[in-house]
Length: 174
Image (cartoon, rainbow, N blue to C red; front, side, top):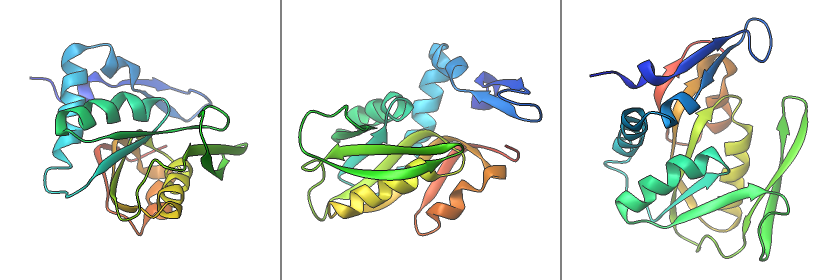
């Protein structure tokens, strides 16, 4: 049986020299790889008491929704600014070359809810740090953050040091 790492396509020197791009689409395109990814991410939640899963567009949706479905939990989408139709709360965060804004519906989290955040990759941690702030602004408690892959060389966990963070696959570099 293949390991999950065997499904990840690594592309050297993309988007710039010295970077190895870890391509999640090669996992998604293989039925066994996709099942293994969902199953292994879900295993990271085995002993976690929580109420709701939150995930950012778009790959947080891809992995968060099936896990929420399997565990009979609701899924709350976090979107780019201007994409949600009702009253929202928003948070700005830094990108490598600029800023971005994410939003979630004001009524998405009920005060006191225990929240798990799901995404495909942790790199610098900026997006997920912004999501934790949104969840807490609405009165939720982040009890776990899970990723499919982690690029340890970018130190994203440093921004999330107050949280229980886990990743199925960890890569040492960038």
